[in-house]
Amino acid sequence: MSQTMTLARPYARAAFAAASGAGQVASWSQALALAARLAADPKVEALLKHPQLSTAEAASLLAVDGAGEDFGRFIELLASNRRLPLLAEIAGMFEQLRAEAEHVVKARVTSASEMPAAELESIRVGLKRRFGREVELETAIDESLIGGAVIDAGDVVIDGSLKSKLSRMQSALAG
Image (cartoon, rainbow, N blue to C red; front, side):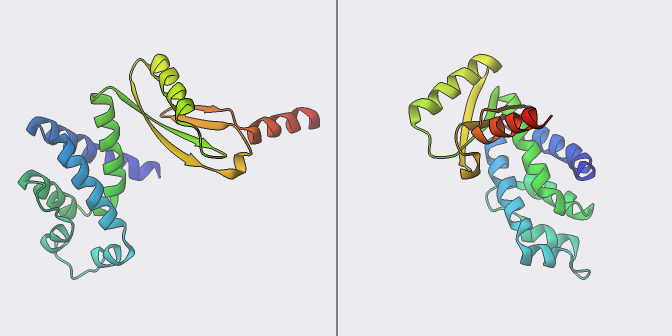
């Protein structure tokens, strides 16, 4: 996985620089996400690997209408360098660069059950205070957590789940 990230990083940075320079970060973000979803489709993925598919044909499969000529040239560059399979990683890194530029932290709150809006807002405010940036929350439910929540905000993971606490207690009693 680290090799794909290493290969994708310069393309993500170049895409972000091109989008920023043109003032089209939002449209590139949407276009990259769509192209990544298309490239990940098993049928499209198999077609992209076909040896008789030309670079131009591969690029046209993933071209996004309305994304602009620069985006089309970027997809052509990826196709000519055989980097279309990296689109998901490139799109993810592009979003990270966008969040950094916009001073936004994206956090995922995974809980055992649906959390009340007031609780989520409290978490958002606490994270905003901790990071000094705006926070965008994404929620998920994982019933195996039993109770509590796990907050994943970039490099920071706060595990307040009951499952984790029970696991730590079991380790302490066993050791």
